[in-house]
Image 1: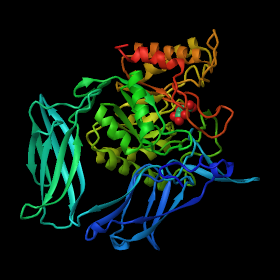
Image 2 (image 1 turned 60 degrees about the vertical axis):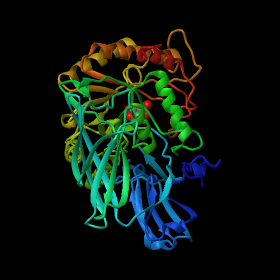
Image 3 (image 1 turned 90 degrees about the vertical axis):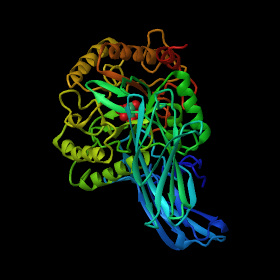
Length: 549
Ligand code: GCB
């Protein structure tokens, strides 16, 4: 099997495409001879949705959750200079206790996997796998939090290490030209930089923090380079502030989704997608509906693209299935469905997301779920501790979740916990289909309601399915003209509401979904096609978002 890639589209066989259960991956690796005496680890950037790993006959690690990394210390199980057999059991089944959830149903035709999120359940080893070597005494974590005092940048850092307790820590901060900007020592500390060069949207300036572990004789035992963007993020009334200045999000909800490789990471596609974001004038995106590859965030850091970072908690809502609003035959929160155990899995997904992404300046806001049921007491109980947990883990960023149309203003019981309101709305598509005049009125009325909360509002989804090449002079739904008219209507509304601080169109590109009468070769709300060709709306958005064309 190809790694990294989803397995689903490799074989021209429906049974393979829709397979659910355990898949076995196996390969041999030779551990470099020079690694003798080092700690050797096997690192997976992601395996969707869970994995168990063996080295030869020894089980070395298991991991739940398809979009965050994990590693195994394999020092005792490999021999430098020799080959080892690596076996991975990849399990793509979804249950009420997985994030995202799903269920296996018995049907007259056999077992079927069902889930409530509107994208294909691609699975496999989606991101690179690494063998790595570190000295026995090594750094295990570095965390930075930045702030500003006028033109002075303040960098609070903490480190963690294992091995020799006597080892000391030394840090050097260098600017982008390699010039020393600050030095410090000790496992935790604060560095200050006068006339700091800020990280800002559109200008992803990065310092390099070198962290060294040193012994009594000042010999470097281990070192790590952590890129640092000095910036602040805050919410003040209905404003979203980056470096103290109001920021307006333009961009998209996206997907890691391409023909053949599915959700597999690919550098060329990554680069091309970022070039298209630049072309169209997007300054931000949301990692809908799961943590994206670390390469994505590294790139966003470097280029000043602002990111809303989302967990894989999508589909915790039995009122929605595959983009269709109707009862799915289950109660969302109950002892048998989404329960305390699910919440613990969800909590762990949040812990792993924050642990992985805490140092990225591009990440300005955590989204702990997309469109969960949020108008019931069960929802309130489920989410309260998850908001508390996220704030405990990271006090430097606002926290929110993405609200669904089924829990409009006045009905939602979870938005009280959020610092920022993120709304997905389809006025003129799923409701008032084709009647943009009525849609405009209803949409504005709802937004005026949310404005009363005096929180910033980001429209995290608005969009219309559009079949490329379909046209009509009267702007009928599914045509390229309708997509433009629909977006124009939304923009008129946003421009009238002061609290709206961002617009992220659904979706950047067409993407694959399960089969359904509402889906034509997948979800067609892309502004680009799945192979990244522009629909007419791409040019319309470009005119709105780019001031220079
Ligand atoms: C939504 C979901 C997204 C769907 C979209 C749609 O609200 O968040 O995952 O793809 O609607 O197109 O129906």
